[in-house]
Length: 292
Ligand code: C2E
Ligand code: MG
Ligand code: MG
Ligand code: MG
Image (tube, protein in one colour):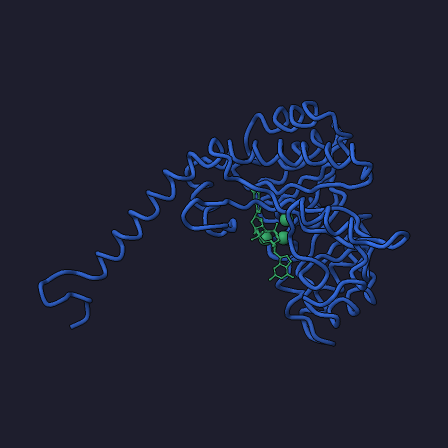
């Protein structure tokens, strides 16, 4: 008896597959309406100057406030959005919303704040990407340098010549480019040298597994050296412990991001944080925060 065939010949395996397919279909149906229903949200995770601030900018991270399922993370719906192409209109919304938020912050006097937006492979390969970015910036009248586009190393290296061209067009607008999840893809150093990016983000898997003298810490140290040699800002993702914070700072990593410093927050939470800060004290100096 190998298959999960029940007493009545009912195949539980198939039943669960169908349930899953039905669930995915329902999710897709809901996702098509998510933007129009105003259910998409951006949360913002700060990036800190090492070791503990001040804040340098924020990364916009997509959330879906599903009416029945609650707040969903990208893992729960991005794969489906990418497979169906829905990521294109959703991604357009993300860019627009990030620019709108930047404009709002700038009008409130927070005019040094920057926002990074993640692009998936499908979005990055859209022929009208440049137009979409230009439009979002223009509509909200923000300085292009306040917007960063994050694309993963894997996506960037899929078709390096095209990537160089795309990033050249984007950076010609004044937008900045960042290579995300670095170390998990297969970069040709020749192409890396030619990429008009200004930032490289060390994937959090390396940060997580670092310990003194082990392979991951050697890799992290090599990535930092490489970034510096190429004149790129280097950011460590997924900093969760004080040890990682100290170690990365010691290696010369300029910027840190991670739950130790701050989780992704709503704009309301960010403003509340600002209001709580005592005069003369930065609201985003991580050391001054109570542990989570
Ligand atoms: P990413 O761009 O590498 O973003 C970092 C992810 O790590 C975020 O997850 C963030 O919440 C999480 N993170 C940050 N600090 C820590 C930490 O200290 N520990 C741990 N364990 N995790 C940490 P999130 O928000 O679930 O996003 C996952 C991925 O989804 C992102 O990875 C990005 O690739 C994608 N994504 C998010 N927002 C968008 C979007 O608007 N458009 C597109 N195309 N992709 C997005
Ligand atoms: Mg990212
Ligand atoms: Mg990343
Ligand atoms: Mg990632």
